[in-house]
Length: 282
Image 1 (tube, rainbow, N blue to C red):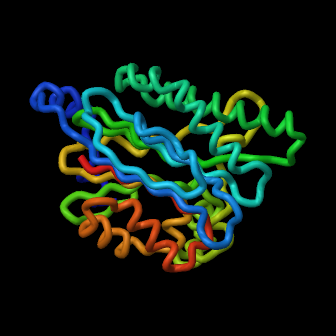
Image 2: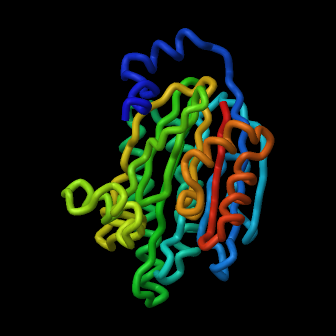
């Protein structure tokens, strides 16, 4: 927590940063998604602003984007074991594309409300898909980073994660919405028990969670200064296969395509799930 607090921007810093730093920063983007060795199809999807969304089962891409406007990146993981997980995650990123202009243009003070309107819309689309296909249930996680030139806002629903790296320190900034974490907070589990419990994969909130038109709330993790920062968004296919120190080592030393290197490492460790990673270096 101490590592996280030192990176969080205070509310009054946001306007000051914009006034003091007029230089337009550049984001170097690395994206990789792989079906793995156990699943027969890829239920992960990603949203990489102008670079697009996933179109192939196994895919990698890279590029650079000027931070001359708010940039939007996300990973959505269709829920394994439920019906049409790949459709749920695809709907999540397609609805995000419809909300892109709204998210890009709102002032920072309205970001949380706008992200939650998007979440409600994506939730409703998934619920309608379930109804039309007479499915039992379906859903998708969401982990998102919205980057202005000088600050970034982080959100999540479910257990897909966002990490930040600065000065060779890696910090998880999102909090998994799982039954294991609830039991940890209730002192039912120790940290080790929570990590290794089947409840670690029982998600308590996700897109598609209800059909009442309400939808889940995206959890804001805070606003972060962007300069010299690396953001990593990933599905649990990465974090289940790789420890944090291993992820950090790759982010520090792999400068060209870190997302590809991270996914390859998850495959080396067994690739038991779909794995998707988006790395954004400012």
